[in-house]
Amino acid sequence: MREKIFLGADHAGFALKEKIKTKLQEQGLVVEDLGNDHWDPADDFPDFAFAVAERVAQEKGRGILFCASGVGMCIAANKVRGIRAVNASNRWLALHSRRDDNTNILCLPAAQLTEKEAAAIINLWLKTPFSKEKRFRRRLKKIEQREGK
Image (cartoon, rainbow, N blue to C red):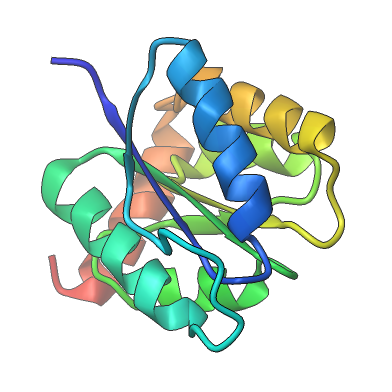
């Protein structure tokens, strides 16, 4: 079974999420959109961050969240046990977050990125494997112990 990519966005990230969702599906990826399913200026980012983070934690998939800055989504997602979310506004952050920290949720600042920039960051993040170097595994183990895993 192929890995599933869970998507979520508030009103500020909705338009970019919809464009990226189409691109990911065209690439043959399994995508599940957890909302919002329409543009709603009164929605709240934690609702979508928690929905995506809980599914990523349960199903061992990965998630991508979109809001204006990426910060709120990242903070909320990281409250769920087992989640290692990163707010990556560029490819360097995306690469290192996957390779060194095995991030499982990518949060993007929709107000700062073009569709092309977001797609490049996402593609790199999805293709970059965790290095599994001893020092990185040791550090992640410490985080898991703190979470009570």
